[in-house]
Amino acid sequence: MSSAPDPAPTPDDLRARSRERWERQAEIWERRRDWFQAAVAPVSHAMIETLNPQPGHVVLEAAAGLGDTGLLAAELVHPGGKVIISDGAEAMVEAARRHAAERGIVNVEVTPMELEWLDMSAASVDGILVRFGYMLVPDPETALRDARRVLRPGGRISLAVWDRVEDNPWLGLGTGILADRGLTERFSPENVEPGPFSLSSADQVTELLGSTGFVLPEVHRVEVAFRSPSAEEARRNFLEFSDRATTALKDAEPALRDEVHAEIEAAFAAHPDPDGPEGAIALPGAVLVAAADA
Image (cartoon, rainbow, N blue to C red; front, side, top):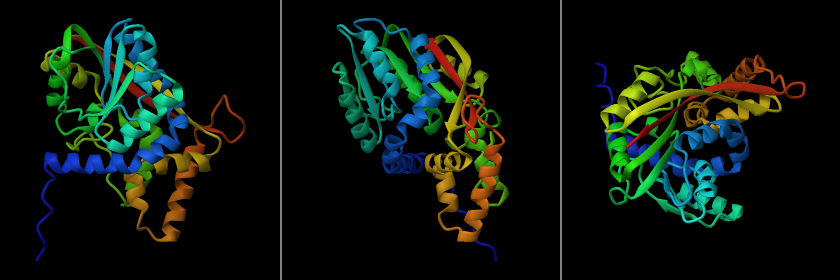
C-alpha cells in the first residue's frame, strides 16, 4: 500500500524555508558579491533610471540582499534624502550594513523588514526598489499592495524579476542537467510555489501591478551575462548560488557528483566569453525591469 503524498507546504512553511535559506546563504552572497553584481549591474542601473530618485527623496529598497541597488540611489537623493535598505534575513541585513559602511555612505538606514509586510507608515516614501524579490514570496499581490500603501501620492516603484528560464542559462542550464538525472525538479511555469521564474512574464507583471493599485506600468527587458574565467569556475559559481542545486547534490555519491560536475562544465563551455581570455565563460541571462506610479 503506497503512502500518502506529503502535504503541500503552507505559505508560512514557504516563508520559514525562505528565511532559513537566506540566513544560510548570506555568507556566500557577501563573498561572491563582486561576481554577481558585475553581472546584474545593468539591472540595478535600469531600475534607478526608471525610478528617477531626486535630492530629498526617501527611497526604500526592500528584499535588498546586500543593498547594491539602494546604495546607487543614496548618491542621487543626497542632499536631504535617504535610503532605507531592508531584508527579511538578519544575516543579509548585517552584510548590507557592513557594505554601506565600507562604501562610506551615510544617508542610509539598514533594518530588518519583511517584503510582504513593510513595517512603515502609510505614504512615507517617495520610491521603492525591489530587485529579485517579488517572485520569491508566497503572496506577491499582498506584498505589492503594501508597497502601494507606503508610497506617497506620486511615488513610484521599480522592480526586477527574472525572465523565462529558457532565457537564463546561467541558472536553468545546470538545473536542467540535475533534473534530467532525477536529482531535482525542473523549473516550470506550472510550479505555483515561489521561485526565480514564478513571475517571468511581462503580461503577468503588468497585470499584477495594475491589480494592486499601481498605474501606468511599464516593463522592459535587460540582458545580462555571468562571466567566469573557466567552465570549472562557472560550475562552482552556479552550485554556490543555487540552493536547489546544492541540496540536490548534497547526498549524491562521489562518482555521480563528479559526473554531474563534468556534464555541467561541458554545457557551460558551450558559452565562451567573446570578450574574455581563452576558456572564459559568459552565461546569458535576461531580466524584466518594471516600473509604475502610485
